[in-house]
Structure formats: structure tokens, C-alpha cells
Amino acid sequence: MNGQTQMLKLLACDTRYYILKELLKKPDYTISLSKKLNIESSVITHALKKLESEGLIHAFRDKKLKYYEIIDKNTINTIFLNLDKLNNKRG
Image (cartoon, rainbow, N blue to C red):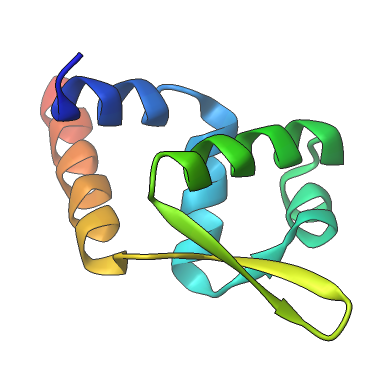
């Protein structure tokens, strides 16, 4: 699978998509994302691991909490902007 296909596959999952949208705003941690997105923390954890293994986010600790942040915000933001443009052209 090529890189573009892999990226589209990652974003095709609603949970991963919404997590990235939230992380564009600021770094966040699992429980906070779970509450904001109204998704079980175990589902959030699984999605975060996938995004981290694909190199889109990385984790860091602040005291006892493990935060996640997007590695390249400009690229992710550009992808979302282009997806929005495509969606607007459709209908």
C-alpha cells in the first residue's frame, strides 16, 4: 500500500479523524479526548496507538499524564482543508 492510500485509510476511521481534529487545537491526553469526543477511552487509546505507530503523533509526559500531539500540524491541517474542499464540491 502506498503512502497516500495509507493516509486515506487512517483518516477513514471517524475516531482517528476526530482525534486529529482535536489535536490540531492543542496536545491532549486520553481521558480528555474521550470526554470531548464522547468515545470510550479504550477506543481512544487504540486509535492513538495506531496514529503514533504511523508517525502522525507522538506522546510526551507532563507529570502523571501522557499527552499526544501531532508531529507535523501543517501537513495534517492541509489534508483537512483539502478534504473540506472536496466535500464542498460534492454537494
